[in-house]
Image (cartoon, rainbow, N blue to C red; front, side, top):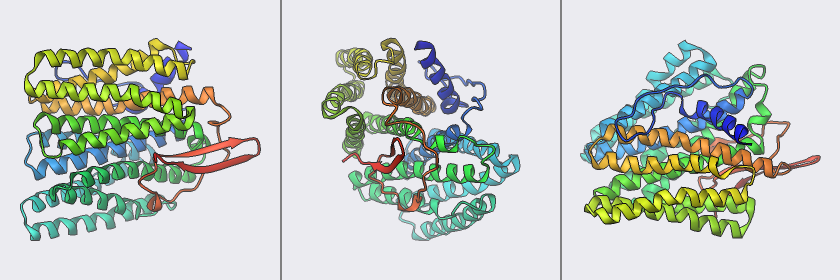
Length: 434
């Protein structure tokens, strides 16, 4: 079983971490991995697009806030966003060729530059500059729509419009000091990008069925579970990073950032409860909540220079990965405690590392660690999803057809698409955290 889990993790790492950097106590160094297996190209495409687009949403919204507030971490966030855009360009090129990737990049960059310009204009109360930025976004929408429909007749050019509006809405709420709404909108924008990624993946699979013969498997309950868990775990990492940035300097939005992190924890617990029942949901919420509290306590200790509190929080964090590994092993016996501890300890180390980097003013390392740790959450989600599917094959099997979706109508409160199967029947629905 350990060899099997190691293989799962290795394949997921190829998807999730190619071109990323490793977290360490010093400035990270770059590393790379071999190309992914050709056995599941459609599944790989779906997961990679969702992960990269979700990361884009986080980075662009955090960078918009940073430029509006003239924060010192803006340049590091902007560089992280550029690396994400390069990865998206590579994903486009892998499907449509280098010329398409080259054509995609300046169009995509136009909306990033326009959003930064709009953020600066909004913060500076410059209506003329804000209107000019909005005009650039409208021009981008026209160009991007033409790019998408020209590349693939199965695509609509309207999918990105909703995402743009959500990006603007979250900054508008943030600038008006409605921080609760700002983070709620950010979560909706992050979730929407996975719907957008699914729409792109379905269209590509429909356009090139010979190149993506596993199209139905890519949208099966098993793959959807893997991706959905990765999405929620990735969001946890993102919100933890934002709570850290806000908490270390006691920004006005720090309470809203922590509350958003708690909301994500509740969604994760609900996802566990949908599989294992109410008792497991409650137990998971308790175990998971301990490491969130310890992480926030570590931030407080660093901010106040309290060495005793820092050591106590650090001890709680390092003990946590053993507690959670035991819990998950009890629910998914096919996953060994040692394998689970290894996966979870990586996450704990990243949480500590990004706080220490930010406290030291090393924003480049903070963003690099956050990006790598975000990608690693999809490794954890893949391992857990595959383990759960092995425990409940009748609930998380494969399907024969790719289910249709409509990105524009996706409800932001839903966490994932769930497809249940039994002999001769298939049900499609959405799993809500509430």
